[in-house]
Length: 432
Image 1 (cartoon, helix red, strand yellow):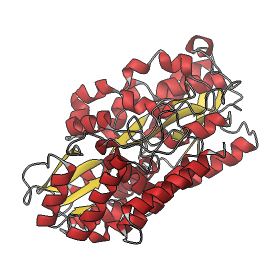
Image 2 (cartoon, rainbow, N blue to C red):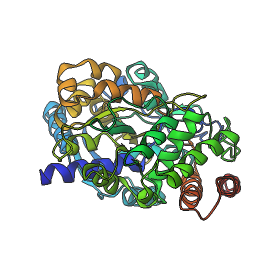
Image 3 (spheres, rainbow, N blue to C red):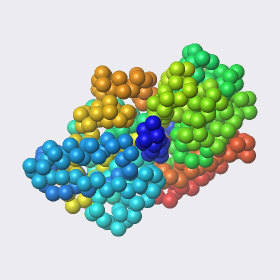
Image 4 (tube, rainbow, N blue to C red):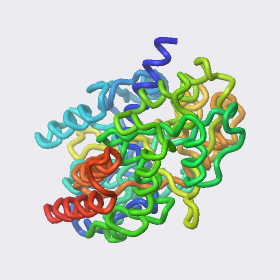
């Protein structure tokens, strides 16, 4: 149990750090960098790469599930006869530290890493800096295999820069002994939360809160950036409605008041110990909840629509990109092709409970058995929205989560919080 828990929580941390993808809450394929990536190196074609030899270094976060390690082992066995192998360089367990270590190498134009395990929120920044290779030709040949929402965060400046290997979407967990049926709207969720033990979510001032806000904002019809990615749209009537619902929930008991301090694990603990009727969390919590004292008293559903508007959500996930400084881009492409293959993604789901990015995977019996909530998960992923695809995403996210948290904590009104965040985002956009 302990080993499984550590692996699941670590995997969730990487997903949460990049917890957004597709349209509605931001720019699904921002054109704000049109021309900014001109001159970026292109990846070789699969035909050009087929006879690759030598060593490929895969730089990634710590593989606590074992899925990547197994994939490398199998790839090496299959390609030994042509003199091609992959070695793994595990950088760190924390996604932010992984990003920092990758940036250090890219700024030094290091050829140490051939393939990078990239969090989906890094794409625009890395592409803008010309640190990664243009994979458009390869991705366009396979794009129909993937759930469209999972591809959106790899699309920047009219090009594709990588493929999603694993995804994740926020899900709604509820105590079925208290609320038998899933709420039909966000408004009903907060109403029923007030009648019972509240709704627990990730409301602390960190990336997770950006995800939580974008989920509600996108359902309400709001955005973070304009369609062209050049202007902030945080201060909008739709976003005011979304944030007011969250703030009112803190006041009425619709939400668990301590949610303004919660990250993923405190949220899960509150739900499992009976301190919350509802919980927003990632799919990793399902297996852990099934080992808790509420194991027979909960169900999972997609996040509800916003009354009078529509559905929304946000994705997490990561996948491979190829370094612009790789000395073996052909070998790197062959490994990228293998690691994002149906065989590997299906196995990741069936053996390691990693949410797949291929729609066909959700029809596989082994995947359905490993992920009993796979139908709900697929719907959540299809409905999900991307956070802004922007080279200054980190500053944009900080403006969102700090100001939304200020409203949740009562130190700013929803209107004032969004107005301040709008100004901060516009200032960040002027820096590139």
